[in-house]
Image (cartoon, rainbow, N blue to C red; front, side, top):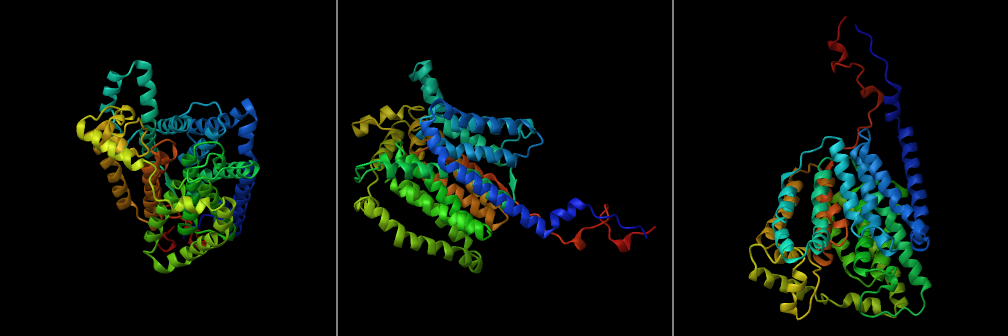
Length: 477
């Protein structure tokens, strides 16, 4: 008989429960330290002047470095992209002097370099059709505007669709197990801790804040409440999704629970309803899908429901009293703040220009004919049909086809939950905030991630000592 080869010490280390536990402990402690460091980071971005440029320079530099290194896996590059997408809102709030669409184009550059350096040149057909359908509308823009204005208009309006296209291409090459997916979520969550602290700081420190039935800039860090609320809502989505769909030890459960409450509180304090509605709508879809396994779903969803109940019993009344009852009045108001009227005007514009639409960026002025005032669209889907006509409808159908196909190819419940939850959050964001931030494009691209089973923690006996895969009984001298 041929003697069995000795087991590799590295294999033993990977399968040793004590070492695996120690590694998990180290990862969580590092995550917690980074989180704590991000609490004051937002104020640094606000008050450090030109030195604040170090933040975007470091993030983009690390992303480019990882993208250039072929030995660095795409999953690690995704961490840099997730952080950049999430921190974009903080840089806008702090008015750091970087290119306005830096979050979208910077992330796209990192993704494209990473893909090309690794010869991942295959592009899924539906994202290509989606973005290609939007190009004919550019011709009208080039005709209607001078060259400089046309460049700015196309850059602003197509940055979101372009980044969505690149995100789908990038994430179609990503494979993650549940632990890697949690780490990926952490890359989004950490910058949002800075955003939450900044909004809390200004809410507490400012005197005589006037609370009305409209969105509040004072409690939003001085920036657009819609965008701030939406990103804090994204924090709610990631933390609660992790509680529902991922296996967590006690430390992570406590962290995600506390973070979800903080994100939710600061999101609703902006008096913009979109953020919490986006998160709630997407999480309902995830919860319904999880009930495919009722016993498992009950164990995970009941604690989340308990946290929600506690939030409305203890946290919401405190916030409502702080605002003099205005917070409750705001969320009892069901008006769409002119979004419905703008959507109706987009439909009217489409009916008058059904083939090519009025051109990219031209609907802003064209809406005046129907509204008696110029207005920017808050709904990406109505903008697509008014500015791109039938080609815009093709783009919309391509988006929904991507979701259906990615749902069908997902083999695990976690994979389907990710596809459905990410798609729902992105669509809800685009319904009320357009594509003003990089987040909806990146989160939609995540529907292309392939979820794989975690690496089996095999016992020593189960490791085969024979390189050719045969068993001992079949081996002979």
